Length: 348
Ligand SMILES: Cc1ncc(COP(=O)(O)O)c(C=O)c1O
Image (cartoon, rainbow, N blue to C red; front, side, top):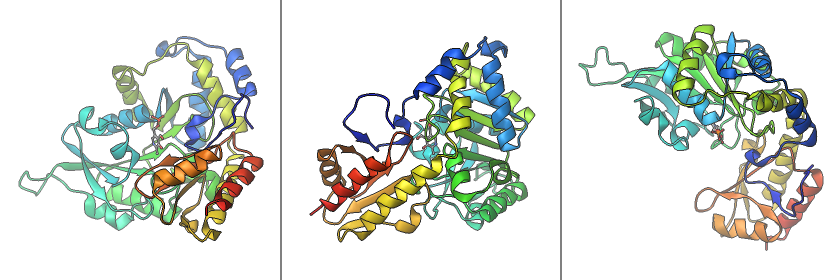
């Protein structure tokens, strides 16, 4: 449900959500303090809560998912190290090249299946300076994305999470999960976050996507990792002061907006099915596991598809020539989905 006047159904991203009235009330009532001094009780409560959810020692509140990943990469690596990433990973594609500029790392690509890397492919991608006559960089960090954004919101199977973690241990690589949408993965698979992350060193979780908070991400990991990350967060300019006012939105989201992600997933599936049934609809139905649908219309560019939907009051993103993306979130109702289905059936 939306709490502000609009005649648009905005499916461009799950980042477009606005804080609900109840979330705003929780924010207004939050006790705060100076978090750079470690004195904000609401931030401390959020960090403890998320660390417990993940089964890890500690957590750190940061302004964005990009900064959480950047701090994780910086803490896990030294300049000249290499990161193993799926070729369409958000860290590579959409974070301004921070891995290179801020951490001095190179990237070894793995071609994935809907954004997910196979454990053996990860193993093959790890290069070590030792024994290479100084030709190779040191592969030191394996990063996965769960769910995978460019993979259409796909989830890793638990066996693959465990197997990639054991590749990390065998090859002396740290293990980081870009879990911007980890809660979508837990709800879709029924596997708890602490089980998923059992063998992993760190995870970055966004509060400002499907969970509906206005900002904030959590970096979670072992006590030593988080202590070192605290310093990098400060250096990157992410030390914040009375930020409990926003951490309260994150606590509210964890209380009220996690289980409901299943509704977003069901609505994404309804839309994907309608596209699959349309004679010109192009969609990989099996690939629709969470709140995203990547799709196209045969014979139309992405822009033409976008314009058709826009004329019906529906906003989506175009990604490449033929492909659009729509994302379900907190403010999209069943009636909105009915409207999307009629716009799909109006495709000639
Ligand atoms: C998979 C993934 N990781 C990280 C981020 C970065 O989050 P932020 O926009 O808060 O920097 C995003 C944002 O869309 C994302 O989809």
